[in-house]
Length: 289
Image (tube, rainbow, N blue to C red):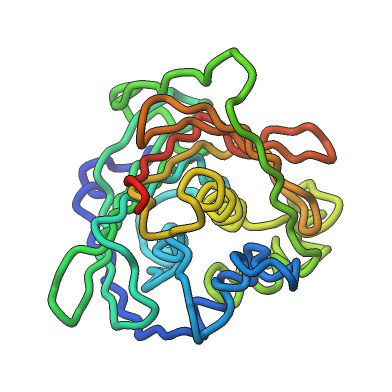
């Protein structure tokens, strides 16, 4: 039965609220690989509460609304949904503690046709409950493989520009821990795909895979170091398209091209397999001190 686009666009996704503190920030940073090199002073700042720096991509897990694609009566074949793209925009630097509220809504749909699936575009705003200020806006594209053919437009957003064909201007490697998925799931997303070998095999993988959003965070950690001089408050926006899974313990190589001052493009490649995990990456960042 085709999905009802009007009902989807009118769906009410409950707001979510979270009180968080330095332990939440550190737990998230550990999942991204911070502290893997105990003598790296810059990296330790993300896991030391006495001088704590906060990962900007933490906004992706704060006040997480949960797996609403499955939990709400939306008429979607949630078992066949895939997270396709993610973007974040920081409206102000993220504090190391606070109480936040997130509001999620479906903002657009694209019909790729019968048997080809549909694209669902969702947006989530994160607010500081102390002063009501907007902290961050996150956009998510979900590929709904079983829900095409409802009669909608085939595309509602322009495709991103391809990455430059020249050699990257900068490159860095970001190792992940074999326990990365086990740690990340304590911040968000308890999908058994990331911990249960049987669930992973049923999904076509030989072992549990790292969360796509964890890979996004690992890339963000490397980009803050490479493009923002290790200052997370300089990051303004980040986006990318998920292409291939990452296994915990693998290394992400970041290839970065400078567009203009304060803007860069990137892709994240699994170094061990030369597989592109995230492409069409874009970054915006403010000037340093």
